Length: 195
Image (cartoon, rainbow, N blue to C red):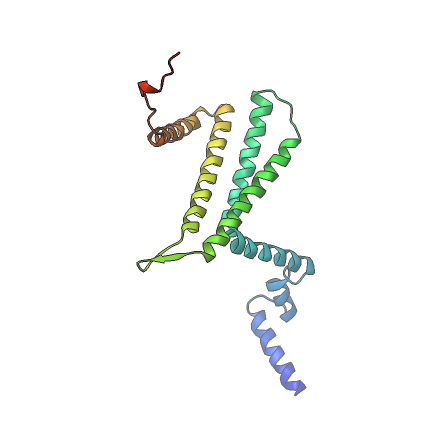
């Protein structure tokens, strides 16, 4: 039995040597060297767990959530740069807390609406409609638009005048939409008081 094992091992090592490996140990070290270390396994497990939780709880793939957090950080960095270099304000460490609160609150809203959208869909005339899924994507899109506008405003303040075009177009569209939604003011002459 031992001779069969030794012969099998020798044939595998001979085959591996034809691919440039010295032996089985060299092959496994080359293939799985970094993975077999315990700290690499721990970090990979942590990141895999976080990615799974983000996708399950927040409703976004991990890469999309990371991009969203990067957008928050970019908005924070451009805002701090605009304050320090253009408005000549001193850096206030309380602003670090603001970014943490913003990320936490917005993530909490996404978690809340994601939980609702996963459980509360209804069927109307055999058509599936999920009001909370609709709200979830509205909140997500408004959040991204708000962050982009803030980043563009900060970049414009820092001297990137080209970006200001996007801000003005966006604000013009929002103002036009708000004017269409406002009810007309009444001009009833009977409501004036007489003394």
